[in-house]
Image (tube, rainbow, N blue to C red; front, side):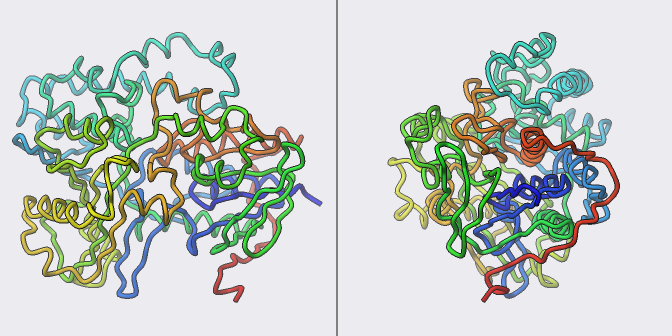
Length: 516
C-alpha cells in the first residue's frame, strides 16, 4: 500500500501539494473546512448569481502554477482561461493625478511623464535592475531553508542586489523622485500586508513581475483556478473532503500519526499543514510539543495587516470603473503608520476596488456588477472594537466610493457582505485576523520563518503563507513544490515529475451534501 498523506486545508498550497503528491504515487487525503476548495482563494457565489473572489483577485507570475501542472503531466491553460489585463489597474492619487498602469513600456513612460517628466526615462533602469534582482533571488525562493547553515550557500551577489538593509520606498528613490511614482511601484508591498516604508527592498520585484509577466484575471474568478486544481487532484486519485472540520492531530511522541475530524479519523505517514500557521499550532498541536513555536513565541511575532472587506452585488454596471482601481490616500504614509504602529482606524483610508464584470461578465447577472472593496486595516488589536466600529467604517469606505464617482451606489445594492478582522479571525480561523500571515520582516524570512519541513514535529510539512517563501499566490505554490520535494525525499520515493499523465483511478470529491 502507498504511504498515506493527509493535507489539512484545501487552500492553494494544499491543492498544489495534493496534485504533486498524488502524482508521486502517494495516497493523499485533503481535509477542507469550507464547502468549496481554495480557502481564501475561492469564489463566493450568491443565490442571485453574483460571484466574488473571497481573497486574491488576480494572478501574478503564474509560471509557478504552470510548473505544478506540468509536473503532473497537465497544461494549466487546458483547465483555466487566464485573461491578461491592459491596463493592469488605475491608480488615483488623492494628492493629485492618476495613472493607468500598463505593461506596455512605451505607454507606461508616457503615463509617468504626465505626472513626473523626469521620472519617465528611469523606468528602463528600474526594470533592468529588478530583472537582475529577480534572476538572482529566484533560486532562493525555490529551495528550502532548514537552518542558518543554508545561508552559507547564498550567492553573495544576490545579497548585494537585494539590499536587505533598505526598504522598498527607499530603494525606489534611486529611480523615481516623485512620491506618487514611487507609490505606483511600491503599493504592491500590501500584497504581503506590509508598508513599503517598512517592507524589505527585495520586494521591489513585486511590481516588476507585474510589468514583466503580466496581471491576469481567471475567467469565473480566482476560485476557478482552485476548482481546476481540486478537479485535477481528484482525477489523479486524491480524496478531497469538503465541509469537514479538523479537530485534532494525534501524535506518537512528536510524530503525527492521524488526523481527527468531525466525521472520521485519518491515519497518516506524513502530514501537510496548509491552515493558517499560528491558528493551527494553537488549536491542533499541544504547546509542549513545540520547542521553537510555543504559544508565547507566536504571541510575540510580528503579523501582517488585515483587511476590511465589502462584497457588493449591484443592480447596474459601472463600466467607467476599471477592473482594478486603487485610490491612494493623500497621507498614505500616515495611513500605514496608523495601521502598523498605532493600530487605529484612519478617517481617510486608501481603498482597492475590484470591478471584474468589465472584463468577465460571468461574474454577475446580466446588467449587474459584483463589486469587491478592500481597505487595509490593522490586525486584531485592543485599540479597535469592531463591534462598535464596523458601521462607522463602512460609511467611511462608502464615502471613498462616492469620491470615485459612485454617488448612487447605495441605492443599487442588492447583496452585501462585510468582513472585518474580527470576522477573518472568527469565521476564517486566521490568527489575529492577519490576512497575510506572519509579516515579511528581515527577522521573519528564510530559515527564521517556520520551515517547510516543520522543525518542531516529525513527519509534518508546512505550505502556505506562514512558511518559506512567504505570502502571495506564486510563492505559496512554490512552498508546495518545496515541501512536496522534501516529503517524497524523506519517504525515499523517486519521482519522475515530468513523465506522462497519471493513470491513477479518479476518486470523487466529497462534500457535506454528498455525504448526507
